[in-house]
Length: 113
Image 1 (cartoon, rainbow, N blue to C red):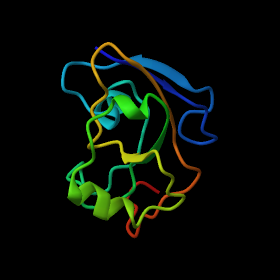
Image 2 (image 1 turned 180 degrees about the vertical axis):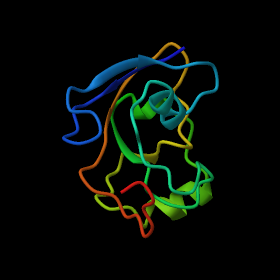
Image 3 (image 1 turned 90 degrees about the vertical axis):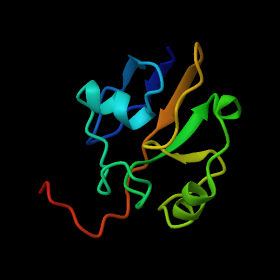
Image 4 (image 1 turned 60 degrees about the vertical axis):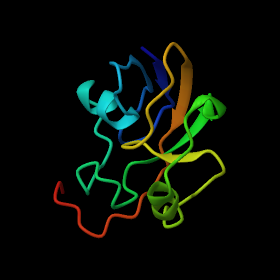
């Protein structure tokens, strides 16, 4: 089980959050399970960038992103060296990581407004 610290985000998580993951659970799945509404327009199939996050602590402990994830990340708003799609990134077991959710994302269709 990993521990994820989510930095405060004005709309999604104003106070920030700390949560534990379940085995083989992605960052996005863990956040959604805890009521943190990270967008995931493609239903976590690695076909968009709405769940883009920036790993601020622990990036080097993750498995490498797949070629498909890398291709999608190239389209993300605010891309950084430690960016990942939260629907694809499984935190390493027994590690503490910190993530930041970008202020914006690119979502051509948003059905929750």
